[in-house]
Image (cartoon, rainbow, N blue to C red; front, side, top):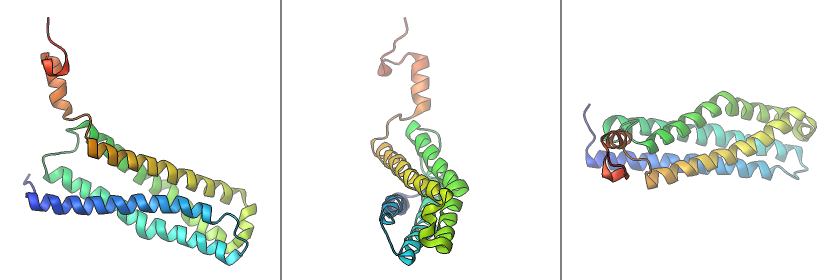
Length: 183
């Protein structure tokens, strides 16, 4: 496969980093919004907070997550990094795909249900056990996703677990590099 030029790689990396930043910020924002609804006494304001929550999820977080995934795919396909050459890349793929699948299958529909419930019941949603469970889950999912994304950024920066194939080959051959020598 043809490889990207250095300039193309830098441009792709910029898009990747910006999309990760928007995704991470959106996750933090959504968690913060869950605390904003506490103590509101106006039903309209309460419903509006939930509309903002839904907006951040579908208009900011989701496109940023998809763009992160797509730029990661392009990066893996058209640079020397590949998909599974390094342990840190495998970790990032697992985190990225896992969060996106969980968000698509469970959290996105839950977010829509929360918005619809509060639009219909306004403050009465506070008496709905389904709403309360979903709202709490939304908060904890946001915290969990933020920690996972932060971890992916740290792993991407430090790049531990480099070149899995080379390390396995070195271990089989008894490379002194890994502290093992044949007897």
